[in-house]
Length: 317
Image (tube, rainbow, N blue to C red; front, side):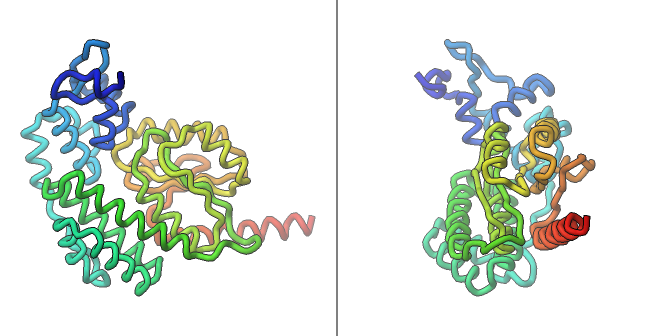
């Protein structure tokens, strides 16, 4: 009998809540201890079972986290206060001047016209080039879709439809990039921690790494720490690139990065990015926080210069 079958009627198991909200099991357990919410019931096997009203409240909390709020300030709020906070957040503009068709994309998502949406995005990627497509179309579109979800105007399945569509477009674009020839750019392993289920930001980063000629090995999402280390060793990685959303606990992020830094070879850099505020609030030794996708090319250029200088120094010695 699986987790879902053991759950009380109308209740969801912790595994189902994780899938439904994107909040990891570890996060849910930590919030329960630290903030007193959620407050799951227990099924006949003693496992957590979450009533529908608590799951809906978790959805609102997740939207607010994506908007930049901190867990400590919102998790314990009552539903009315959460809804008021959600309603008070101003709507996000429909993107920068060089993405004039953003409204059209949003309309296609709202109508569930996935095939026309896929064609329109494919055409935009060809017309703009992959860098501009990622930074001026996909990035603001992510914000706009998240804003609609935040205000309850998009449902979870609509966000998933959008994510699957953009994922297909980006994978197709990445597949068309010629493989790297020779040395000169880093070997990069891309993934997320085991508690992080969201991979669209990771895929956007992979596209820009690949354009710079990097040899990319993407492990997808939810990779255990030991597997990340083994992959970095097997790939002889110069960089391990990790993506984080705001839904992940800051403690999990910081502790995990420190642990990964201890386990990786000193020559292997760790680059991190995403929407988790703790990444940019404090400097972590041996960790490079990349605030914007646009800066990936500059960071790789800097990496090349350091490698060249180190080689010249070694030759001179």
